[in-house]
Amino acid sequence: MNPLLSVRGLGISIGPANPVDSVSFDVNASEMLGIVGESGSGKSLTLRALLQLLPPHARTTGTATWQGRDLLAMPADDIRRVRGREVAVIYQEPMTALDPVLTIGLQITESLNVHLGLRGAAARVRAVQLLDRVGIPDAKRRLDNYPHEFSGGMRQRAMIAIALAAEPKLLLADEPTTALDVTIQDQILKLLLQLKEDLHMSVILVTHDLGIVAGTCDRVAVMYAGRIMESGPVYSVFRAPAHAYTLGLMRSVPNPAHARQLLSGISGTPPEPSHMPPGCRFAPRCGFATPQCSEAPPPLRECGPAHQTACIHADRIRQSVRVTA
Ligand SMILES: Nc1ncnc2c1ncn2[C@@H]1O[C@H](COP(=O)(O)OP(=O)(O)OP(=O)(O)O)[C@@H](O)[C@H]1O
Ligand code: SF4
Ligand SMILES: [Mg+2]
Image (cartoon, rainbow, N blue to C red):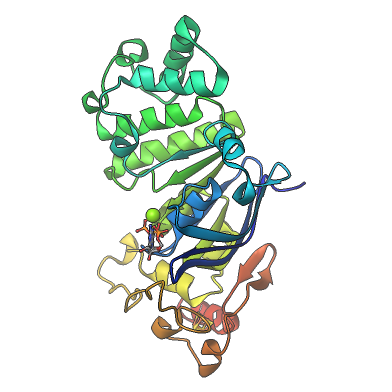
């Protein structure tokens, strides 16, 4: 079966900087793909590029095939029709995406009007259904509230309701729970999983939290300094990581069973997009690096069923996981 979305060789340049380089991934129907990586690794730019929401001076290369067409090359009118209707987005901070001077109900009915042509009572009935669907109690009354009358978790639910108005096939969720406290985070993630199942929707979930990926996603792509370092089924990547960066991220996650154990995370900081190291971009921070790592950018290669790594010393990484397990 063809993937729903197929991104090949996506590159983004903003002036002299190349914050995203040669990024390729697929999203299959009804699956949740996690894109994980440190701050600045290019996760948000990647999502924005798919809907042509980059700053005007940014340039893209590569393709993003959606329903037989390239999203990156679509004329403005066409991409506007895809946005919201076929592919919807939710962001980390719903307050910046919601309009503070319009009621939640108006913002949902506006979306229903634009994407589905629904108006008046029909739009209001559907808006109540949507708010109800995302778990907002007393939805009919809540429709007339303004965003500031909602808690952070409820605002994110309202954002999801707006995003779902046109029943998109793909939801781009950019750190949708980062601004929320842990229990609310968990509720929103459960809601996303449930909606994905019920609506047969695919989701790209961007996060810097490996635990969230492990708990929700089917597949994961690990990004570092604008490139995909490793990708594959979640169970395979977490059981047998094949890239030193993935291993570093995994060792940065506190393990409650070893609360007193020191975290052996990743030292140093990611490179600036205008000064990317040659070869493997992780090399300056990598404890496994050899001179060969800096010779040429390692391409992604198969290292297991549907599992790919861009580390030339994947065997040594896996060996070290076995030794310390
Ligand atoms: N409009 C812009 N102009 C120039 N550089 C930009 C712009 N937007 C982002 N960048 C740079 O591109 C890189 C990737 O940014 P991006 O926002 O995609 O990172 P991210 O992985 O989403 O990080 P975070 O986890 O902090 O959200 C960063 O180094 C950032 O400084
Ligand atoms: S290719 Fe080399 S530098 Fe890059 S992650 Fe693997 S071992 Fe480290
Ligand atoms: Mg981001």
